[in-house]
Length: 248
Image (tube, rainbow, N blue to C red; front, top):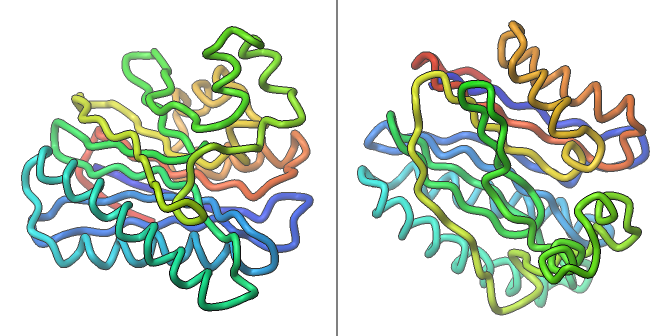
C-alpha cells in the first residue's frame, strides 16, 4: 500500500484546522485518518489535532489483526475521544463548543475498515469507477434524503456546512463504520469538505486516473480546490493498493 497526503490552509482562511496522519500498529496494519476541526479561535485546531494524534498513538499500541477487531476498535476509540474532547472543552473556556469531523481507514492487504462522522469523506476508484463510500452527516444531506432538495441544490445551499454529527460537542458520537473489499489497483481517497465542496467527482476521478504519482495527485487536487476559490482548509490522503511502499 502506497500512501501520500497533503493539507493546505486554502485561499481565505488564516488558520488550518484540518489534521491528517498515518500510523502503523504492531501487526503492520495502517490507520489513515483525517479530521476537520470545528469551533472558534483555536478550538477546531485543538479538537482535530487531539482526535488524530490520540487515536493514532493508541492504534500504534494495538495488535489488531482482523477486520472485525479493527471495526470494534474504531467504534470504541471514537466514543472515547468524543468524551475526552468534551471534557477538555468544558475545562477551558476558550475551547467551549469545539469539535471535529473524522474519516478514518484501517487498511489490510485485501480489506479495509472505513469510518466517518461529519462531512469528511471517503471515496474509492476501482476499474475506472469512482464512488463515494461515506455518507455526509449534514443538514442538507438529510434534506436530500427526504426529497426536500436535490443533490445539485444541496451543493450551493448556504446551509451545506451545517453538520449533524461530530466528535465533541454532543455526548453522542454515532460513527458510520463499514468493512470493504480492497482489490489490487484500488485507490482510496480521504478528504475534507474543502476539496469535495470545490472539486467535482468527475474532476477528482480524472486526477486519480492520471499517470501522476500519488504525491503529485494530492498536490493537483489541492491546486484545483484553490483555483476554484479555496474558501476552506483542504486536506487529501490517497492510498494506492498497487504496491506496498508507503510514503508521506
